[in-house]
Image (cartoon, rainbow, N blue to C red; front, top):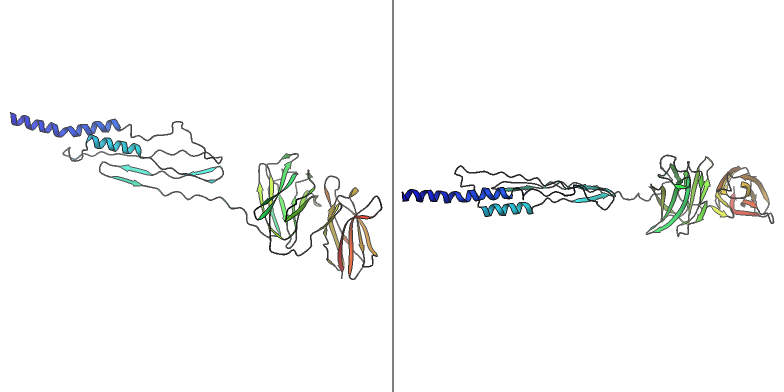
Length: 370
């Protein structure tokens, strides 16, 4: 009897660790569940976009027993340590902004555990898009852009200095209020010329007809009523340049950056004086046959007088041409003349007669006869 009682007591003592292990596992099951965001809402990434929430870590546990009921068991202390380790582990979530207002989130690590082993597999971080770099500076003679015809006015033309370049900003409006997006535009920048022209077919009014920009590179601007309709903005630079164009919306702004170039200007800048700007011909141009005269002015009653004088001061040609505006903004004029043949240097004058003494107020450029 004593022998049988001793054997039974030993069997009960051997089963005690199994009971303790099962009890501890049941008590710690809830504690090992993943912790979620109590608010149920994502945070903010600081760039205007919503930050995605981290999905909970995926955890699975399986319990296996050996046929003897003793070989695979763990003590209650070991089970408690395992439960605390599971709570302490977390999923590493990385959120990286790729552009203003957007974020992307890496996939969480997936972890699986068994009583006898622990394996962890980490998915590779996603490839993040990088922000587009600004457009490169170019010397292209022409460019186009914009969309639609919502904008119909120029509200302002502004200038700023930056490291290595100067910026001209054209603020565009729908009436007197800022427009949402940049309308269709075309750009002309002849090689070796200090003139850059941007034409807006939908623009028909401006609050700022002209101004001195005061930069070391860009000099001045004029807003001109275009001959085909719409308006164009001429920007004059003091020396050769490369440029880039940026479109900004809400409000609509067309930005042109000017960067100094090592090249030399091939032609002089347009002549400007009084209320007249002469874009063709340029100083020193050679004339052999027909003579194209074009520019813009704000002379009274849109009347422009053109006088060609020979080397001795003799008047070879005199003609009047009207521009298409003068009161609201600068008006464009253009005419083709047929001067008499002449040799050597002559002087082309374009402007308006002074009401005081009748003298011509405007521009004067030398040209060469064929």
